[in-house]
Image (cartoon, rainbow, N blue to C red; front, top):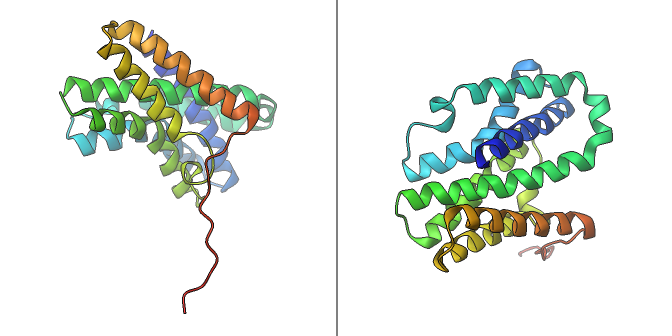
Length: 204
C-alpha cells in the first residue's frame, strides 16, 4: 500500500513541479529536471547524508520515466490543472506524510538514533520542494510560514511513538499517515501559519 501511495505522490509532485517550471519559461528539459528534483530530490539528499546507496531512482529507473511523463503531461494540460488546485494540494499533503514515513523507515533499518530518524523523515518529505523553489528562484515554502516541516516531524514522531508502544509497523504507518494528513489538511483549510521572525532595524 505504501508503495502505491508513493507512486501517486511522486506523480502528483512531478505534475505540480511542471507548473513551477512553466512559470519560469523553461523548456521540456527544464520541466523534466524540476519534476525529478521535486519528486525524487528529498530521498536523494537523505541517501547522500546517510550514505545509503544506490539511490532509489537508480534502483528503480522507472521512477524517472513516471515523473518525467507526468510532468510533460501536466505541461500539455496546464490550463486545465488550474481547476484542480485543491486536489493537488491534497495530493501534496499525502506525499508529505508518505515520504516522511518512508524516510523514517529507511533510517530505522540503518539503526540510527531517534533524532536522525526524525530528521531523515523530514528531509525526505520536504527537501524536494526546497530544491524546486531554489532552482525556480523562489523563497522555499518551507522557510516562509506554511505548517509543513512541522507536519513531517509530527508524522515521524507518531510513527516512532506507535512502534514504541508495541504497534506493528503497518499500524504505525496507517496511524501516523492519518494524523499527519489530517494536520496538514487542517493547516490548508484554516490557513495555519508558523510564527515569523521579522527584523527591519539596520546595524550601524
